[in-house]
Length: 195
Image 1 (tube, rainbow, N blue to C red):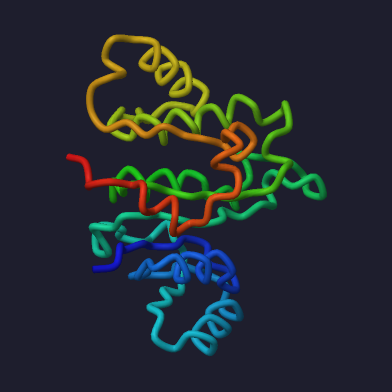
Image 2: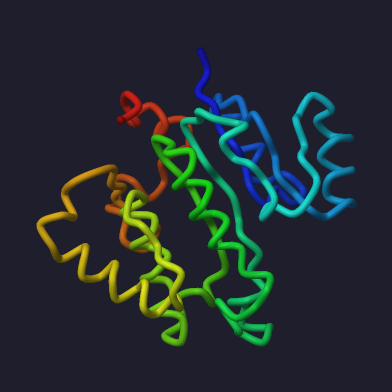
């Protein structure tokens, strides 16, 4: 039995092809751009391409899955853009986080531009990282900076070891033995689904 995945922000399908080649059955490819959806459907007519705004997606309709993958739009963080980050309405990291929180996969992969690692986004990247690390931690209806402080306190508390927890390994911090691991080899290390 193949492992199941969903992919967000599929674009023309580059990451989707890698996931497929790794042996995953992707139950849904989410993309809003009509031309990209046409390309996906033409190249892979059997794929379930869900065209629309991912903010309206009911991810639970597609679970359970072993992997959530995607490349949230880069424009909010790109060196060539206005670098508005969280304040850019194209920032879809909140949706990527929501998918992980709702589906609770064994693993997730998100890729983005190098500009995301600039010092001006350091706190926001930490906010994303902590939300993904502690998907059970409730996010309050507060500005993200206040939720970041709450998550930082949680990560330093005794409560941090309770509930579902993911360990994030950015490519830049991956040990040399993992820096060139294929998706299929990494997937073989996932182990059984957690609670």
